[in-house]
Length: 401
Image (cartoon, rainbow, N blue to C red; front, side):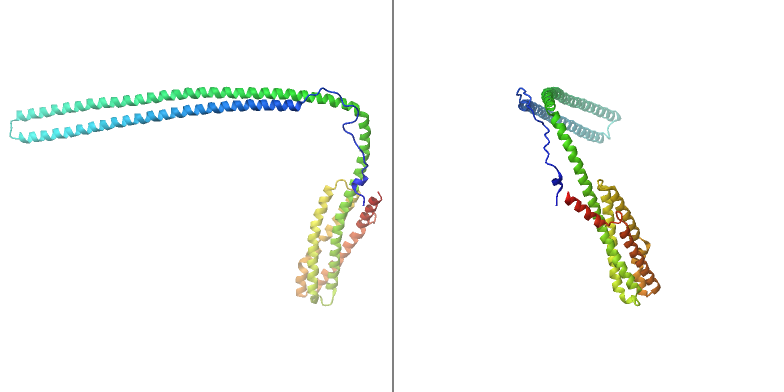
């Protein structure tokens, strides 16, 4: 059988045309672009190396500042802790002295119980004076220690602030450096892009000029080739339309086979239901009902498939598609009829109960549906020609071509 390629004339369509090639100075744009790319890449690598070195130096300086702050805090905290211990120790010693003084005064009062009032008064005044002096000395010492503690804290904060300022200055310098590096990268990238753009534009301009010269040299030849291409396109479109119509008919013939099997089962059911003892043929009835249900499922699937073909095969013969659609619509009405649904659902039930009247009614429905399906298959065609005959005719035409 001939294939689609057998119908396509061996036409050589020259897109670039003949004629002498325009003479142009030899410029290796590809090499120039590659050299530019390499130079740009090397510059970026050098800049990236400098950025890494600067980043490492900044990180090293920042780590040193962080370590210095840590050491200052450590030493300051140790000094503060020593002063606090000293303050607490002084406070404890003061309490001990107060207690000792109280004990001594209590002992003196005990010894002076028989003494004159004036003597006891003098002892009390002496005790009060000693307590006052002791308290004053303690307060003075505490003030000195607290002041020292305050100065230590202040000095520690001052040292830390000094280091922080140094770190902030370092950070500010680093930010300026990063901004400059970013600016250098952007300028370098822009310069590379501009140079590359100019080279590509020059290359494009030269190619356009050469293309225009080529176009002028091949106009006549191309017009002839285009006419040949139009003729070829018309022939191919005709083949495509014929092939698409065949595919639609092939799918329709599949559903015709399904309907024929259904018709045969309906005829058998009519015979079984009309017999004198339909109950004895219950197993035969069940087999035919199973076959009908199977055909119904296949019909539903194939009907969906045909509908999809109607949409996909846009190149098919419109009249053929119209006949197939009408054919499918009539078959669907019969295959989805209430009589067929009731028969498949209730016949076995009524057969088991021996309801002769209903069984005979189902038999009549089966005969009616079988005749309807046969009539549809007989009537629906291209002017009375069946689907298979039409497809066979189209195959013969293609063989002749």
